[in-house]
Length: 164
Image (cartoon, rainbow, N blue to C red; front, side, top):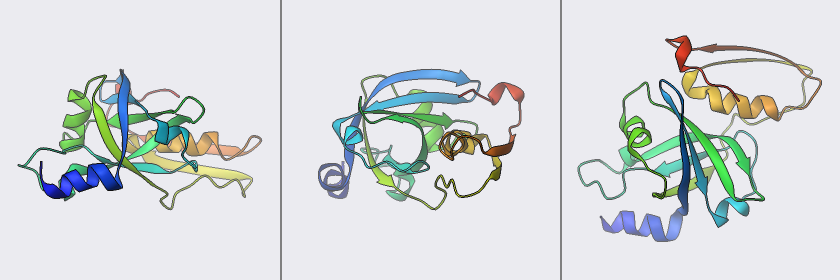
């Protein structure tokens, strides 16, 4: 592990443990992370995580070790969050999602992003692909009741979709 990776782990990143891994569809895994930092997070619906998934792998550049994942669901009181990670791209993040195990430690940083839940309109059109589905579920759950919402989500196979 490089000096930079050690500094990232100890100074910059939060640590969590994978406490659950479930296959949601042919190409999506639900991965639950638990930590005290999740319990203390000031979470805004639509925020995401920058995860360091290649720490220790010297064959991969530092920029390729960082992947962004939307928070599908969060329980701040219990200190856990769920990610729904699509693996259809077969990239480094896909490989990590396929290979990670319950009990593994992970490292992450919160990111606010620009696509947050906003309840100021009366109606919404939500459009995205399978990789955005968990993010769109979070937005939909947090834009308020009594809103008119229409959604279009694309995937190459119906079997790849998953439910809330």
